[in-house]
Length: 112
Length: 113
Image (cartoon, rainbow over all chains, first blue to last red; front, side):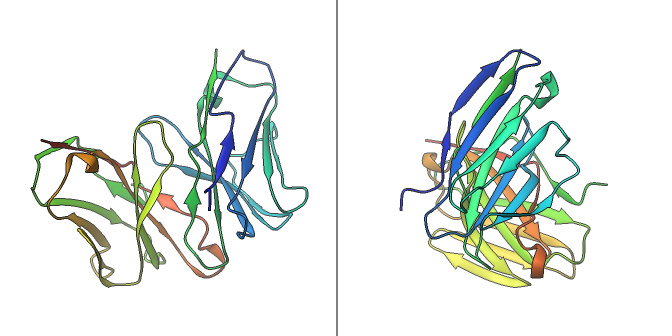
């Protein structure tokens, strides 16, 4: 069990650019989640997949954000036309059904 | 009023002290309660996971849930410098929404050798 893996660990981008993050969940987990954490705050829920189906999206996830989990394994989170307010830690988590969430170490996004 | 309130600290204690961390909440539908530990520039690591009211012990850690008071606690006995981290409480409504965690802001703990 290598845990939840996220790539890259840190991304610096200029305002207006598109960025994509990848998450590899724990292999036996069919549920995958994205959360966002800003400085001094707890993580906030963004979206949730069960296998390849995206079952819920938070109102925090604007039209510039899109997440996919094409084969029910890894997931990607894309942010288009980044804004400075998008600067945050983007956390991926996975779980088995009914079990607690296990988080990765996140991708820290800095928008300049 | 936020759904989950947690004193951000910082909290500084000497090695060996008993640490008490707390959260209050307003949503009576919360049924699952968790404590996560987060080291600097790392993701949250699950420490304790409890359902409904009661106590749960795991080594030096004890989690308490009092649903009647909407209050949860984490106690750390014989604290060590390696316990220095931010501690996040989290909770969910359970059922079909048990994945949607609501977190407190986190309490920054420093254990001094």
